Image (tube, rainbow, N blue to C red; front, side, top):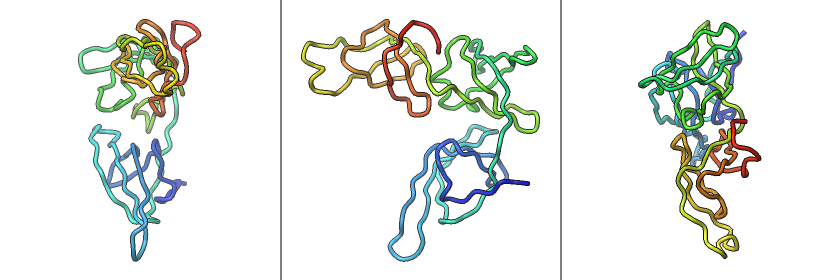
Amino acid sequence: MAQVVDTSDFRPGLKIKWEGGMWTILECSHHKMGRGGAIVRGKLRNLETGSSVEQSFKSGERFERVIFDEKPAQYQYKDGDDYVFMDLETFDQVYLPGEILGDAIKYLIDNLEVSFDMYEGRVMGIELPKSVELEVTDTPPGFKGDTASGGGKPAATQTGLVVTVPFFVENGEYIVVDTRTGEYLERAKRGNGV
């Protein structure tokens, strides 16, 4: 039996069937209109094509939720426009295009263990761990006294992801980044993947 959700259930990461395709919600915001009902504005990405759209929905609109089976996998390397993973059950190599992976590519480091999102035998995307350790490759130097301001500075990582970090973080250090929000969590205790 299909699980049905409505617009009040919308949150980033929710996957729904809409317009004949499967979509994941990237962003959503609820808006109350002056007279009448509320609307939900959302940005969605098609799981089969990788294309994104912005759409408004009436409050209370109902959708079938897409629930995936998960299968363990490990990221291996990039090959042209594809990202190569190893299925940890069959040890087969699986090539996935960047469009399907979306922002997940900003967190892919060698040997990172992920889960394939499987639907009717097809890989529709990946599920990342909650956090990953990334090496800081480019950040301006901190200065004495900067810590008092409580701000931060931009830091580029080995994957190209730019994160705001505290002033004391330097090039070559490893940091823990939340894969759901893209935010700095802490300095890494060691210099390899989580």
